[in-house]
Image (cartoon, rainbow, N blue to C red; front, top):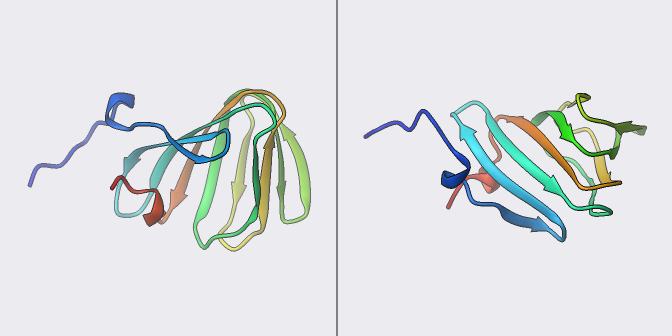
Length: 112
């Protein structure tokens, strides 16, 4: 079986995960997963939690994050870390792009 070491956007179509929120699952190993999320202005990810550690980087835009009861407006270049089990949410104040890594990978985000 051949291993795919490189993933381009053409290999990873955008999926509308929630209204105005588009996920592209990019590189994935058995231990981690990298996803790109495009959030349209005023789109929101409701409060939730999952067992996966999550770290992210804001490429462009402006996003209001709440994690563990702490709120922060994240701008381009900002990063964030959300340990598994921590309740969090997000709202795009403008069109925004973030790149996130999940460990372990989220099975529901794997390409079908």
